[in-house]
Length: 289
Image (cartoon, rainbow, N blue to C red; front, side, top):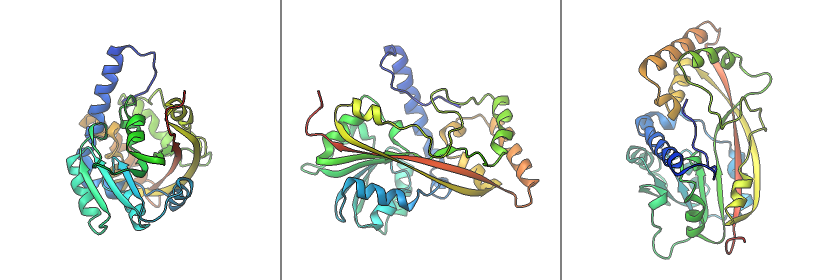
């Protein structure tokens, strides 16, 4: 499994350039999953949106900017709550899918392109800039400054990501499948926690504060679970950049083992637990320090 890009300041320019190239290559892989992304990816808990709105002090009619909306998984719940949402989506096919999914919401607009080079309409500022399972794909040298630039004074930045978590009494299939991942050479990323527990995901508070552009950082953790039959779970895996990047033989070996093990279960299903850390931070009037 490819390693997720990091932000260590000690990296040499050559290493940082390679990390940037890897990030650009991997984040473009989602185009191949555009048709299945909406159905396969999990919905975020309603409580997460309620807490986001409360912490950011949002009111219906406020302008929100979403980075990397994909097919609109996080866009629609906020549009239904009465917010005007501008989405910036890198993938053309993902953006096309989002336009179809969100056509019923007149307050939603979708712009094609990368957030790092996107230009806000003249005179428009946003009360919230947010990213749902997309923030880590952005250039670390640009993302905080760009978000600060387009936010209204006192506006907020928010981001979260759906992560796999492992309760003590969770489904044993993930332990059973680990030897298969090892066999096909798909190692666990070194910069991600090994088997995090629900409520135990690391947060990015220190990174946000280190930007000097945002303060009053608040984090909240949310946990939920989804039950999957074999083909739905394989469809989910096919929307992950790490699995899209696998060779055909690697996917065949892994997916064959998933099908075999679930076929032996009475209900033919597995249970995957999800966790998300919601980060909400207020835009400072000027850079701290």
